[in-house]
Figure 1 (tube, rainbow, N blue to C red):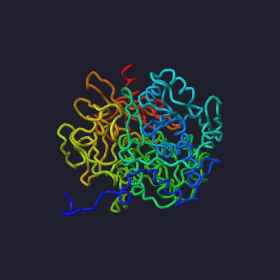
Figure 2 (tube, one colour):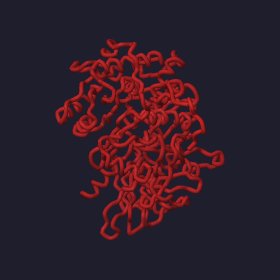
Figure 3 (cartoon, one colour):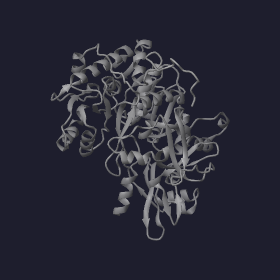
Figure 4 (spheres, rainbow, N blue to C red):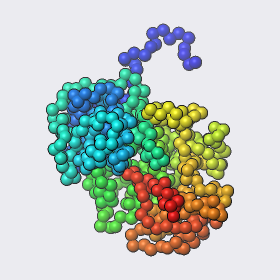
Length: 542
């Protein structure tokens, strides 16, 4: 189908077919944007020529250590220049990059190193104690260690391992990058959070990394020379592919080791940051920052937010501060963002809560996906586009992972019926825009009624005393389970349980109103997601 009657001589060849890889972006940028700033971190300021040279040297150093195409190279690094360089240097020697969450405990790190089979580990001295303990717990051989000190942050080398800068200095600047022969070759290995058992190893291919990075340039409406602040950890979905994306448009990666309100405001004011991504908790951090932590700036900062549906109250508060927020949604299995809440001109007149509520939707498929839809999980039929019928968000296209490493059963389950099953429960509006109701495991069923924890959270986040909240199911003898709200108050604010329950009852159906409110600091992942499983466990023990 689709072939002409006679295509003699119309074959793929070196001139007309090259496997897609984000390595091509940096190779081009080193020519086109040679003298433009590529990576900034305090006194570390490298042009694209220098960036490409350091990447080449890293690839050479890894090859000299015995890393071969298809091997895994792991990192335990914060958002510092070496982590950005690894995104190109590791695949440039033909290897697969495994960025490990720096907040994991030693047992899980040991499992990841064993399961992925890392040959080399690049590690910040801050995380060496955890890495050393992980090595003792490993069943297989421990990886070779390259220590990456961060003198700018006062994190100095221990002297026990080879140092990153020494290896780069001794490496071959003429090393020939090993480009993929097939774009289906693996480029990265990322592990899921593993909140209900061992984490799964999500495998990315060069084609998906290339297309996801390129597609987000369009979705984020980027022009040349953006300045991107690394708030999304580069160990999380490879920083949503944004490090791979920056060379496409000659962008500057502004590294941020510690995510605080002063660090973000300083970067915007001093480094003229134009873009960043982050969970809604980051937006709340900025909204609630005291005056002495803020800085003035005179440009609009474009923000991709994801990780949890942002409360309308959060969106209403952040935009007048100089931030234009686009809500995106995705998973590790989709290389990060897979949908975008594409703004329609016909909505320009919306104000206040109506505007914020429209912006809180997860939206439509990003350009590189064939389809993002809501289907009935059992029948695989589309749910009615009425904004009410619940189904599961499913993805199909080149932005979906290869599968789970060494886990064909889980891969087959995830891809059943020709779609990737997200596990997120949602409705689809008449205009096709998707809106999450909840994770499948987070739906609260009280007396036979389905309650969206996201809906209840959105209401409570509108209360002026509430900074963060999470709603989970609490076992109940009469109703089976009822909503319980865990609330983190703003500094200096003193709302009580009765006040918040009354506030919710004015805005929600009675059965959706929380029956209990617990005030505490909420447990969070390194990417700012609230760990609801810990809250559920605390209620089971109560």
